[in-house]
Length: 128
Image (cartoon, rainbow, N blue to C red; front, top):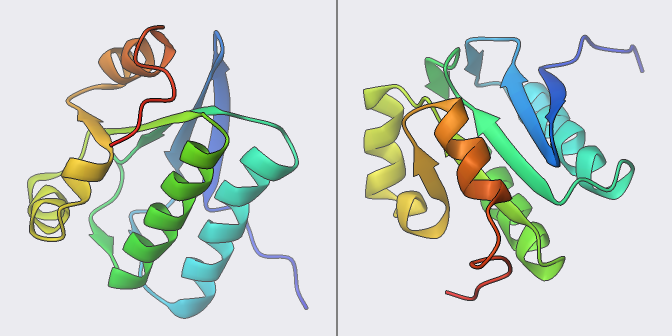
């Protein structure tokens, strides 16, 4: 199988791993699977338990991506980790609201607020 280019770029801000997309859309099945794998690898292989996913570049997502994000959130919760989303365009935010993903995962307007939200103690490992 050929090695595909990464769909995400991860950087570290304090104890928080910030994920930025390197593409504006994740629609086809191969990309959805790859995205799921890359995000899971951050947790499984690199031990990241505080994650901010920055959607500023994303214009289109397939519904299958929502499933990957929900699974990722479940994994983070089971590890007592924290995950937040930020910089979501209005069309995608509408989808997150319809699917109630906005009730499951904290969503912030910008990356700085999300990093602060994920790194602050107190609500760590809370149950919904």
